[in-house]
Structure formats: C-alpha cells, structure tokens
Image (cartoon, rainbow, N blue to C red; front, side, top):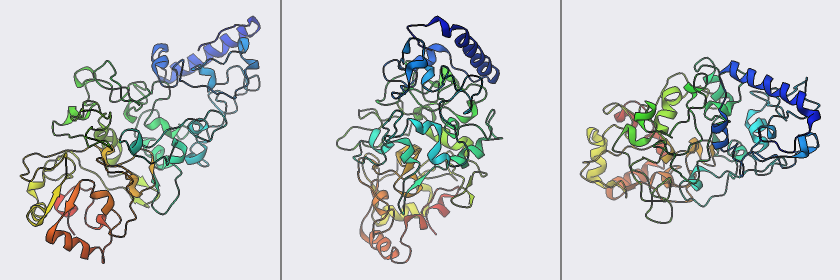
Length: 419
C-alpha cells in the first residue's frame, strides 16, 4: 500500500486492518507479492487504480496515491471498519453472481467508459490487437452487455457456475472475472510487450491456477521455464498469425512476427477447462456447448490440427474453385495452418453472434447479418469461393442462409464441413 503524509492518529487502526487483510489473504492462498502487484496493471504507480472521485479526507495525509490498494479496498473509510458491508472491504457491492453480474460486477465500477468512479476505456480485441476501426464496445462492461439481433457475450453466471466445483477455490461468491484474470497480478497487455520471461505481458490466468498458483499468469513464460505451453508457438510450428488491418504486418503486435511467439496460447486456455469439455452448460443455448477438438490430427477441427487433405469435401473445394487467401494460401496443401481462438473470436463480447470478431485477417467492419448468408462476410476474410462451388453456395443460401448450417466446430471433420 502506497501512502504518504502519515497521520499518527490512524496508526493503530491502519496496522490492525493491514494485519487482518494479510492474514485473510494468506489463509486463502490468494495473495500477490508486493513487487508483483506493483508490476501489475492495477498496481502501476502512474496508470494503475485511481478512484479519482474518492474522498481522501479519511486517508492519512489526505493522499490518494495511484496504484494504492485503498482505491478498491476502503481501509480508511470509517463506515466500513468493523462492518465491511461489501465484503473484502470493497468500496462497492460485488453483486455476484446475482442479481445481474453482466452489469453490476464490481470490476465494472471502473471498467466502464461512463463510470463516475474512474472511467476506463477497453476496446475490442478486433481493434486493440487486430487494427479494426470499430469503437463499439469501448469498455468491458459494454462488451458483456451489447444489444442487437446478433450481439453475443460470455455469460458470467455460466462461467462462474462451471468453475465452481471444477477448479480449486471457486465458490458462488467469487467474482466471475477471476475465472480468467487475477486482479492483483494481471498486467497491461497492450501494446504487446515482451515479459522478460520468454513470453509477453499478459492479463490472463488459467482457472486451474486460482486456488494453487493464483498469481501465475498465462502467456508470459517460455515452456521450459513454466512447464506449460503458454505461447501459441509452444503447441505448434504451424501457427500463422493473421494480418493486422491496414498493411502487411501481423497480429497481435502490428509487426512482422508470425509464429505465435508473442501470443498467449489461447487454444489451451479456452479448451482445456471449458470449451474442450462436454459438460459446459449454456443458459442462452439451453444445452451444453459443442466440444471443440483442436488437437486431433484426424478427428479434430480443421482450423486446428486436422489436415484438410484428409476430407473429400476439402478436395471438392480445391477442385471446383475454393481457396484461402494470404497469408494462408497453399493450393497444394503442403502446410497445415493452425489458428488461435482469438484469431476469430472476441474474449468478452461482440456485436456479432458467437463472439465473432469485427475484423479478421486484415478485413475490417465485418458483420454477421449480410444477405448472402449470415457468415459470408466473416468467412470470406480467409476463404474465397469461385466457379461452380461459388454458384452452389449462392444457391444454397436461398434455402439455408447460414454458413454454420454446414460448417461448425466439432470432432468429426467430415460431419463438420458438410451436412
């Protein structure tokens, strides 16, 4: 905690509060070291947490130091001492998981561009790491609460419900944002910056680490250092980064790096505990989500490691005029490109359905409501159809006006890519 101008009359209560907080944190095994917190996005002394409208009169010396713990934990609010109405000495209710975690989550006190507490702007992955022009959403709260016929987002209640009982430490009172992030250790991940440990600065943490290694970030280390495949390059040499909008550079850093060495391994992050399982329930779909198999070379997803040449419908595409565009063009199928989840999907929410991005592979302003099939605009960022196969698809859209009618994530590539 960074505090200056100390007033001695606050010393006994301050020491008591700090001791209680530390004991509670250590008993839960969920505490960041001081140096880790100061390296985090929240603890940064120039750009970290700063409740700008906070009343500082109760703070020692009246100092509201940027990055201080007390911007979230009201340790000097006399109405909280001995009462703690919001839990964890937070300055506002956590409201989690009820009544409406999509809009009343404690994190949205700041991660809301319209906040009166401290407005924080966070654009979409499409804009931040893909170069897209869309300014909607412009904060995390909005990303989870987009409106429109095609808007989609992760359901925070579903996310937390799945974590409870499957990952150590999660309870019904845990903030759902903590399933993917550690509030004390998450780093500022834009602009893309090397971590010094072989990866990049990152804001994500595996759900599996919550109860045992809560400050172990994902994507910041070499495989040899962490023992895990934290970067895309660690799981495959066939990863190819998509284009960044507006030039010949590549995501996510808008530079010449193409091999995934500067990209967290979202494939493992998303699939191992969630989207690769068969028991992930979706309230919106009223069913369990489709299990995605990204790793199997023969029965997996063709955007993963399954090779296109093993599928007769893939050969049909090649023969009759279907091909992929740069940087994925390979008419002889000698190279099996493997994609990352964030190459196509937003992590929080999107104006498009299924969290589909609004910029993909250098193509911008993508929507999923085009007349030629809801996903035509999206899929043609990488796939182009010509000749007979193009005519066939155009005719098909009059009956089944959706690419997903035939093409989905799944375990069997033949079933996935045809009827």
